[in-house]
Length: 162
Image (cartoon, rainbow, N blue to C red; front, side, top):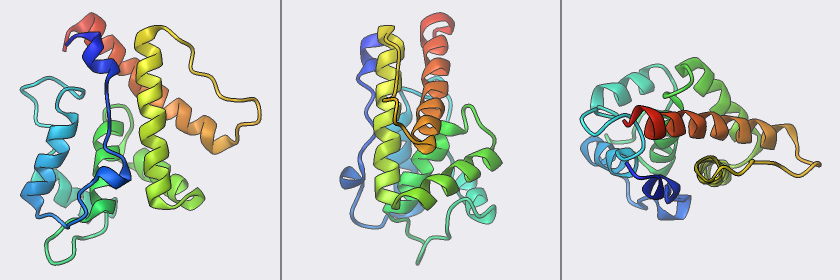
């Protein structure tokens, strides 16, 4: 994959997520469509129905209502799919809990998207990702989480050619 494609990485913002609730198959399709070029290789499945059902059983996401998944489910699943590349499910659960304690879900999700895109762009461009001196702990943690994924992606796409 060319670095140009990677540096144009874009996660749909809260306002871009489907406004209507989706069935499980549709949810899987949305996740795969948005992440396929950035996680693993093209032959790998990023997420399955079984995985989503397990996340519900583990309490990582709330059960769907009438077998339909809403924006919160989709946003959380996008975050999980990205972070499971580098963190354990229990670590991801703690990170999501912290993020949603300090900000509304839509705000926390959009902040994650922005931090991740910036970290990926900066990593592939060779620019240091810094925060203002007056940054709070949560901003620093979010930057570190985003940077850890960006660094892994850089190694995979630049040296391992996945």
